[in-house]
Amino acid sequence: MADSTPRRFTRRTFLGWWMASLLTSTVVIGLAPILVFLWPAPPKGQKKTAIPVTLDKAISELSAGEAIKFDAPKTPNSAFIMANGGGDNAQGDLAFGGFACKDEKGTTHVFAINCSHLGCPIGLNTTENTFDCPCHGSRFHLDGTVLHGPAPAPLSDLTWKEGDNPKTIVVDGLILGF
Image (cartoon, rainbow, N blue to C red; front, side, top):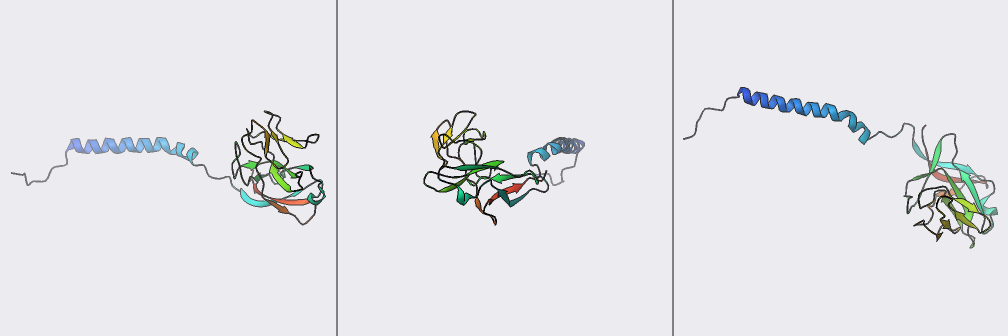
């Protein structure tokens, strides 16, 4: 026969619940400061925008096999957004410089300056019309494809359009806000 009287809330039950709530609140208080670092807020003032870049020479004046280096403006502090990626580069990664060039076929390309192997800045080899990485010896054709490894992927493109001035291009970028 079942006991019809309700169970009493005993001191042991009360102390068990009290200890559980005390332990839970201690864990929450201890972890709360760490959670801020797991999901940081984006920097204030950071915004995506089109960045005008003035080149030394108009793109229309480039001959086949010629390239021009350009850097992201320092004021305001900005960077270019890679349109695609491969290797160490990924779509949406930032580059602080680039090259505008015409390959041997006369096609215009605008690349991020980052090597696809480990992200080192590439340089233009004018004697052999290639982009060379000084860190590990990767070489790229002027169309961005890999000529010699260890780079596993072609150079990353930058999204761009011609500006108002013939010597100006507008590249998708980010104002960094610091």
